[in-house]
Image (tube, rainbow, N blue to C red; front, side, top):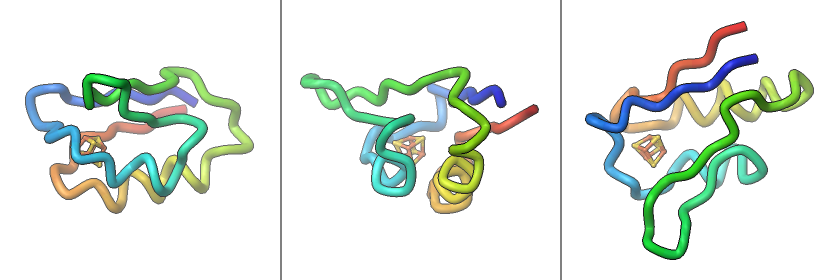
Length: 62
Ligand code: SF4
């Protein structure tokens, strides 16, 4: 699975970090960091993160 985030859309408020905390996190400056190639076992959590993202900034592909 491949994950990308549109930085122009992302507001860095971190809703995605609650759905998939091992993939998305806010760094100590409050900027979103994420794993671009998480294990496929995390797909449900990553899909949920994409669903809850209020900016529709997360794109998940195979
Ligand atoms: S939920 Fe979306 S807008 Fe919010 S931090 Fe995550 S990727 Fe950015």
